[in-house]
Image (cartoon, rainbow, N blue to C red):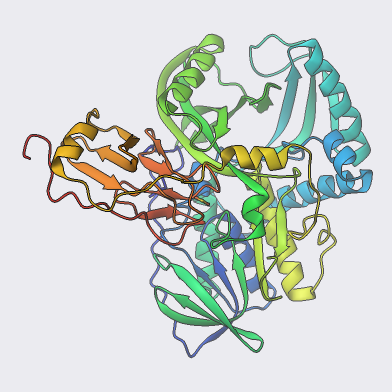
Length: 512
Ligand code: FES
């Protein structure tokens, strides 16, 4: 299965790309067009279809190409934003609603797996969180009390499933895990069997409002729909939400262990934290470890992040083999909760789901239910809590976004002479770099054969300078997370246009 990076996740192995033969025509009016064929888009499509709506999904690449294919697939009753944080930044009622929402997310997974008999390794598990320093113990105690008040089912425990020293630990009951791409593929099949339309390799460019209808321009022609949902991780174009979410990259490995595999989910309390779980696929167990998160394009040596994760894992576990390593992007919301609902600055019938932080799989099924209620009933009990229009500035976030915003000031050349390129191209094979020379800034990449690719490094979204991601072989934008391949083509939004190519002729190392 294809994904938005050069590394291969556990969920891509032995899973075929979804085959779809759907087509559409401008004569058809859909109740809802969903943009994005990840877990949020496909689940929402199925729920809306079950509610009697005529639904189409347009995916720019193939199903699960984005973060769904790069998740570690934890289904939790607690979020990265702890219940005590939610109580203090929002309210006790908000924390209770979050607890209720996370439970409904897990129950929806459970229902789908049972109703459609999906063989995707879904299992209910316990989730252990442990403190290793006195400060973390204080934090854990606060978390415990607030979780109880919110209605979460947890208790203190003396043992944890991983062989790590700790001072104090809790277990959250009723967590879950699954194989995400198998699950989404099964839902997509159910959706299509029910008459739903999935258009893969179908980019959505723009829309125009015509009375209550939206005329949506796509790679497959114009689609008419009464509602539009951006389930694209972050919406395209320039929107207030780009300034309320910050892109982060997280790392994961899957390893085979000598001996026992820890059962259940475990989390330490460092920032960034490490997380562990075991998944069995085709009779083989894999131990999945994640962590080493950083702001997108803020780490030049991404391989070091994998190495740190592997070193961390081998310190505690008897690793026989590292079978997979992959990284993925997520969006951290400014105030700690996702944005699900009407997209500000757009017609009333345009919706979005974004800002899932590190809880994408859990939020996917919250978003699917909230968006379905908003479209079919005009309301949801979570409408205000997740409203993308809520104003909740958190101290420090403005500075945080600014820190990411390395907006271009330099002149960027359109053509590089071979002489200049020679001087600029002291790159190793497979290396990429943003290079400055005589006031010009160029994004250069040299492939394994020595061919040089030169691009204007100014992100077409809002003019930040992209950075090279050596592990995923992509140009990543630190500001709002747009990503481009070595040819400058958009891998993931919010950018709509690719990076401008800089003319080089056929400059190949050793030839010019
Ligand atoms: Fe917004 Fe690059 S993603 S400037």
